[in-house]
Length: 407
Image (cartoon, rainbow, N blue to C red; front, top):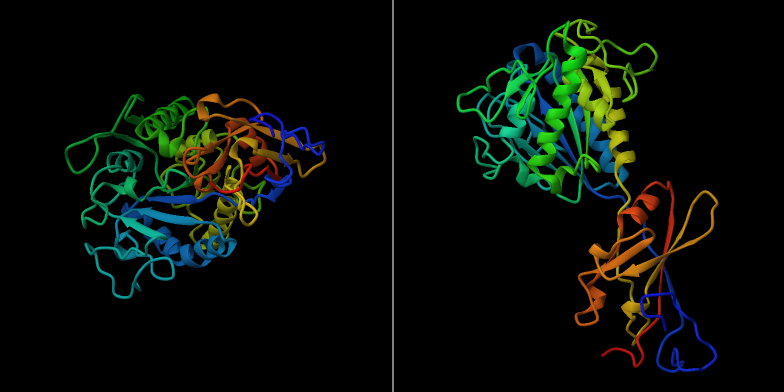
């Protein structure tokens, strides 16, 4: 048979595949599944946010979690915000997403998490302009109830796509790390220091703030958030923007321009240019935060986006050999059939990730020496991109058996 190159089906009996010892070419259709998603809510607890908190609390179970759950996606929700009654601009998420009912919840009490689906991180409140700094500063710091001794980072899954949803009615101005209760404000953008500027400077300062925050988030944990070339996160904003009259839900696409500082919805302080700019940078959407009453459709839309954005998995378990046989890992190939026309493509096997090239894959965790059946087949980046860019790809695994059956 082949040795990592093409699979040769030999019927001529010249010894390439002993017909009595090996099996015919085995073709397995790989199950295409979507990867997991971690959804992280970052909520402003300033006193102007009471109405929005109530709207989030009432919509997150019905119009967000249920929609994602019914899609079958492996999802997790992480809430970074103060836990308590909405009258205190904090919030409590009850079942089915949260752990316990929220009736009679009082301030300064521990949230009830519902593993492995819902986690609430409360170290303190998030104020009007410091959400970015607190979430970064708290990444590895314990919450005040010690539910996450290693910070909210311990609830993230590195294989999951991260979808952030920031809810605030104000701009950004803060720096980190900090020692007091609140991060100091910031007047010049730089690493770990972010500001939208003012109504006259926001057009240049907000995108600058977003770039520094993005660089700091990526540097904080590239395994979780990716790199500037290949981000593993999207940032949606519910900020002070006015409704976009050109869209049914009032949202803005990443390609729509920055909404001016003073073009704000009625109850907001300003349009939140920095969080807007971060959504534009990462391909996220922007919604008006003042639409508390319209959060049902907004949360549905974000849930649908999470489902669509979940990436197709690029690794496949080693298929089962015929009874009494053992697959020969060296002969494995992967065949990809595009859903929209186009001819079948063969992805070839390379030794490991360092040998990756276009249209290739490698075997991870199993080898000739070990138990190949325990391994998985992992597509190299370029092949993975091809499959993920296809709405309904067909992936088949082709293999021959080892001569002589199992060892």
